Image (tube, rainbow, N blue to C red):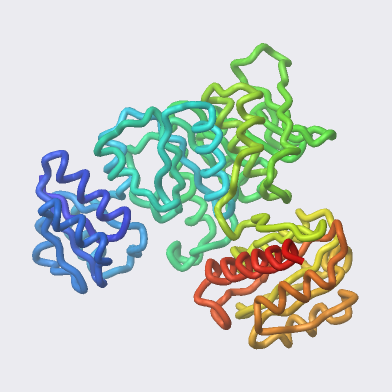
Length: 457
């Protein structure tokens, strides 16, 4: 078969290598420049490729096309392929044809990466032979070339799910559905929800979903998957009914009840020792723990794995402690909703560092939390006027700076033992930093420098 790969980043190059390894003739086309590392992989494999263009004559010769997730349906090259009737699939669809491993596939608007990394960590710490793939930055197709794992934990965006057809996860997890990427779905939330629900179509074991999320509950109720699904929720009094398999008890432990267990048997998992904080992370933990229990991990294995888990950087990440004051890097909180989760999740008094490039933010939802928890707000941005106007009468102390090091030092001076210094900007980073990773990295470095100075005094 002649297979054309559109896009030559992680997923595209992985798909090209797998397709060639399985005996197909392969051509790779990227409308932009291909990164040197990916070019080298293609060259070493002897795979033909082009960059900075899509040669339609060549592409339309394909028996099948593997489309990278970043290419929208409206792209001219995709429209030309649709007009000809050429089958278009995703890298995930291709990979699924060549593995017998059990894939645990995780999607949702928010929390995908944390849940994926936690699920992977729990299984790996328990000694299972497990791989990590998908939207976390590792090509599933390239790993399937060797196919040496019994399980793959795969983070999937809606874009990666769009061109799946027969791909069959062993477990599928849907965390939540909130408006995002609607420009790719005709500005229609139902279309976006349908893309997310594709994860459940061919599940062989269980479809796990968040019954506490209204849009997810609505999408599941409108589907044919509710009858064989497992649900998790914050509390036992849930609209999930008989599907409810995980919920939090009054003592904060996660209660588990799976259909195949003896009737009425409920297990408790202690989650207090996990480094993850906040309501959203309770949901992420519930999903990951439920998946791990279905795989067969014991309560003891799960509790042990929770304690040793380290989340991806810049997501409510504890980066240091000075004189009883904890410093938390939540630079990934580039919008109001994410900052709300951070403020809600921290139970101690907060010295809050926020600000950056405002994306038309409405800070109204943050006002009650700021009034209740923030001892001070340090505005870190080029233009802080909107933050000052919104929170100036809400927090007891407000000041501003354009230096991350100054922000950290002032926060440390304003904090008392037992307080938390929280970088949760609620804004994009591009006024003072390259990106949110750069902002979080500089914050962590400033904390580390201050810790070193404190230790040498």
